[in-house]
Length: 328
Image (cartoon, rainbow, N blue to C red):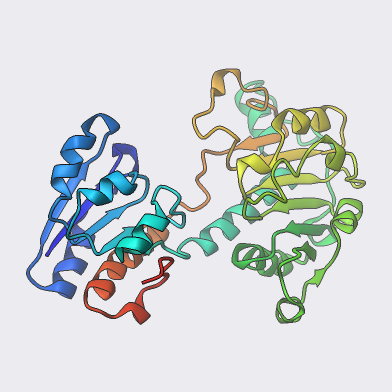
C-alpha cells in the first residue's frame, strides 16, 4: 500500500514520524511518501498520487482531475475538520472515502475563549501597553469592570465548543445563556444553560461570544444593527468564523461604545494586512492569529485521528473511522 501525506508547506506537520508509526503499525508493510505541495507542482503531484491508496491532507485540492490521476485511491483523510477542498460528489461516484477529523480541539478553543474573556475583563492589554509603551505604573489607567462572577455570558452557537465554554464559565461563577436554533431542549437540560432568543442575549449579556458554525443564516450576523442592540455594552468575542462579523461595523460599534472591547481569533481575511488593519493596536481589542486550537495535545490528536482513519478504512473497519462523510 502507498499513502501520500501532502500539503502546502505552512500546513505541514513539523515531523511525520508519529503518522508513519501509526500507518506502519496498523497496515504492516506500506510505503509512506511525504510531499510538499504547491499549485505550480500540480502535475508532479498527479504523478506522486498515481498509485496511492490513500491521501492525507488538509488543504490540497483533490478535485475530479486529481482523482482521475489516482486510479488506486480508496480514501482521502483530512487532518482538518473541513473538507471543502475535496470534490465530494466525484469521490462518492468513485467510491472513495472522505474522512475529516470531526473534533480534536474543543477543549483548547474553550480554554482560549475563557482566556480572552478574562484578559478583556481584567484590562490586561491596556495595562501591558501602558507599562511597555508609556512606562507608567497605574492601576486606574482604565475604568474597572465587575467581577467575572457578577457577569452574564451570552453564547451564540451551543454545539460542542459552546457547551465547553459554558461549563468553564460556570466554573468561574458566570451566569450563562445561549442561543442556538439547532439545539434540542435535552442539551439545555444536560448543561444547565438556558436557551434564549438572540434579542435576550443582546439585552442582558455582559460578554457575548460567537461559537457558531458559518452558514447562510449567520453570514455577517454581527453587524452594526445587532451591535446597537447590545444594551450592556458587552465585550464581544469571535471564535467562530471571520465572515460572521462585519469588521468595519465592529470598529464603529467600539467607537460608539456599543461594544466595550473585542477579542478576535480570526479575521475575515485569513492573510490580513495587519500593518493597515484598523483593529490592530487598539487597547481594548485583542487579535490573535487563528491560534485557539493550537496546543501540543491538539496537534497530537489531529495526527492520531486523521492517520488512524486511513488505517481503519483500508482495513475495512469503516465503523471505527472517526467521521466518514462520503457515501460508500
